[in-house]
Amino acid sequence: MNNYGLYIHIPFCGYICNYCDFVKMIPKNQEIVDKYLNRLVQEINLYQKYFNKITTIYIGGGTPSILSCQQLDYLLSRIFEINAIEKTIEINPESYTLEKGLVLKKYGINRVSIGVQSFKQETINYIGRNHNLDDVIYAINSLKSIGINNISIDLIYAIPGQSIDDIKNDLNFAISLDVKHISYYSLILEDKTFFYHQFLKGKFKPVDNEIEASMFELIIKSLKDNGFEHYEISNFAKKGYESKHNMLYWNHNNYIGVGLGAHGFVDNLRTYNNVSLNKYFNEFQKSNRIIDMQENLADELIFGLRLLKGVNISYIENKYEIDLMTKFPQLEFKIKQNLVEIKEGYLKLTEKGIFFGNLVFEVFI
Ligand code: SF4
Image 1 (cartoon, rainbow, N blue to C red):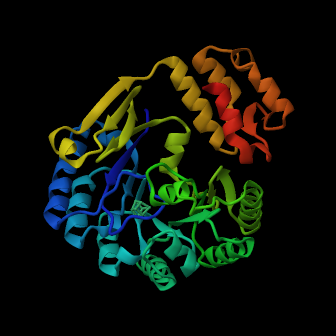
Image 2 (image 1 turned 90 degrees about the vertical axis):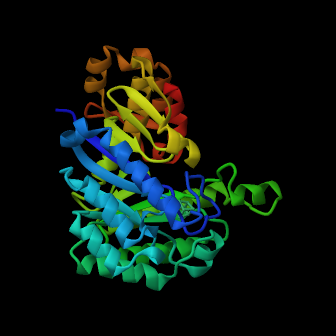
């Protein structure tokens, strides 16, 4: 039986971070939020026939923790009957409360991903976020106290002004929190963000590539030395705590995407939801299209190579009836460049390739 993931998007935030290009907005009032949740539940119900196949649920944003206890209760009670093994919600430290934690617990949320980004107040302020260290510690202790121990934190490196010592301090602090999972992303300068406008005005200077690489090297070493497995380019987990939901993406499995701007991949159909709230209120989807074999193959290789274990060559060759090296002769060159390697039947990024994944992925596009 095929496994499915369910992604639920909550687009509301209390403020807009300087680097963010997600589908998000500051809600005008609570009526809008209630109206959205109502519509969202209608969309979820369209997928009723998949409910017994859903193994993971991920409520992301935006900032799902901006919802009130009543709003969380409304949404979570509507999906409670879905018997997924992993149910994750994203929270921001400043909008989390114990009362909200208890609502999460009541409805079986068993994994929480916290947007921390940095432990240094100056850096948090610089990227336009609104929490402090006490908020982070409170959220983590509170979640643990109610038995939600599967906690992930998001961190960012290569933020202008960040030094190697700052990364060391962030790593030490992150490790001391005894969380199960860490996602560590480099800051990407995205179009239409505040930072991008600053960049165009010459007021934002991206971190030098070599410094960025040194930071990433330090992150990998330090987390590995402290019991985390580096299992995906940007993700690290204690044994058995990999994100099951995200594994569905990287393994090119099915996932239903509901909510503003969400996209999905269901039975070979890619779905793209409307990104404007008014449009979403009238119609959930903006478009959808069937993915052909060629595109599936490219996606499967690109997503699969993000996983450090790589992709199983014979599985791919049988599924797509191809010979991998004949189909993508440029791979030979990438192997010679020591970006990718074949080991025990798997095609995988080398230690060097982890830093230059895009140079490998371009082969498949
Ligand atoms: S990064 Fe998160 S909290 Fe900040 S604006 Fe984007 S979605 Fe909202």
